Amino acid sequence: MIEILLFSSDLLELSALKKKAEQIIGSMNHTLLSFGNVMDMMDYIHSSRPDKMMIFFSENSVIPGIEASLKIYSMNPKSRFCLIRRDAPDDLEAMFFNGVSYYVPSVQDDVRLARCFRRFFEFYDESYNKMLMLKNKAGEQAIPIRQILYCMSDKRKVIFVGKERSWEFYYKLDEIEKMAGNNFLRCHQSYLVNMDRIEKFVEDGLLLTSGDFVPVSRKKYFSSKRAYLSYVTDSKEPIL
Image 1 (tube, rainbow, N blue to C red):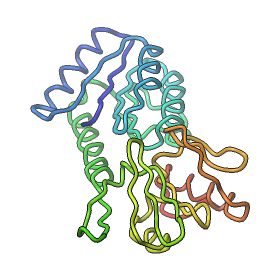
Image 2: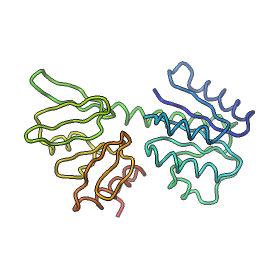
Image 3: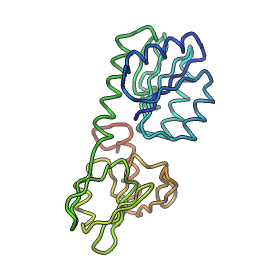
Image 4: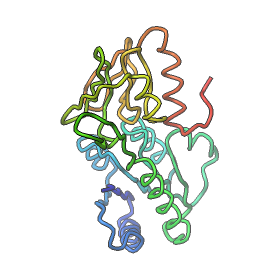
């Protein structure tokens, strides 16, 4: 389920945006919330930490939108943020580097608004439903990648640590790294971390959104940080 957050300080515009969102979503089962106060919206995001989140932010000035997108981006780098504003910002590049995913000039622009929704849904369909297929004595087991915080090698086993449970399989971490794809970062010889779960880099490792700490080796610290920045900005090439 995707949480769709709508914001406008203009209550009439907020009402119009909500009606259009309801029309676009139709019978799809997603949470739709509207906010007239930006602090209320930020408090909700900070407390609930949705895994899948789409924000549609309409305001007369571009500055509040950029500030909100940057804060949300720091809490959830894989969220999708649409800025709605009549006049295009002067610096479009800065807008996108600060977490804005899409720009629509007006709530009344039905075509672009619908296109934005479609692209956001396509993004989550592709990235959210990936499964890791692993074998053990009982057969093959599918683990949703979104549930994995990090993987840790322990002798001949790999322990997959999730928010609510863990799994153990007889694999080498090198094998899991190849299977997991670009969602995961090899930050240490013994650790593989889900980059969608990284809260921030700290002095000697990573702090995850769950509160867990994952060590980063000295040799891999700066390369890990560059790889993570490339990932969250959807860059096709590593950031140098």
